[in-house]
Image 1 (cartoon, helix red, strand yellow):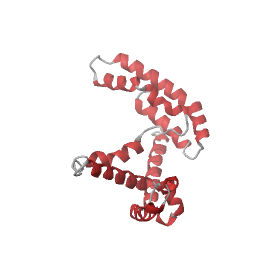
Image 2 (cartoon, one colour; image 1 turned 135 degrees about the vertical axis):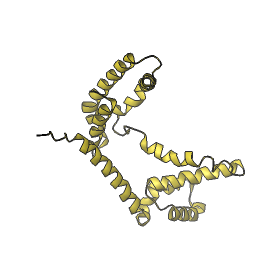
Image 3 (tube, one colour; image 1 turned 90 degrees about the horizontal axis):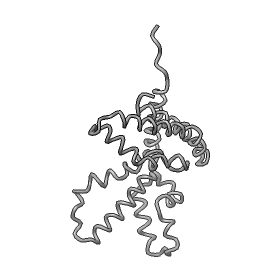
Image 4 (cartoon, one colour; image 1 turned 60 degrees about the vertical axis):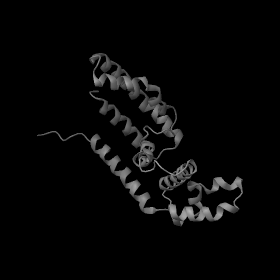
Length: 196
């Protein structure tokens, strides 16, 4: 294998195949198909590390990856762990971009309230829930809801009782983005036509 991209393409191809599988099936597929690639990739990285000059940026990047190898490879041990943290980074992007805009809340209570709102609205976004409908209903019910029933008000559970407030457009857009990404990866797997 000639590059790190080649290894990652092979690993993501396996993830594409496992997309509709159960957690246990995905874990078994990773153990059978992905684990040998990950082992080979690790060996390739170690060899590249030795070839690079001591102060090379590539050597530093390889050292960064190999020093965290167990954190990377832990996804092989359980089918529920994603291969990357792209969803988490996308969710955190808004907090990072708004950090300077949100420097001043007036007091610490204002900051805690803003953090609660941000968490709820991002959870709504993640589960394709209309945040206005969700917050309106939850704030109406909150004063009379016993503490033991509070988990039922979380966005992922609330939407099951209120499917009319699912933002279908967002769900469709997310599905279409994922399908386009899978199609691009599938296109890479098709060998280029050989010239006659």
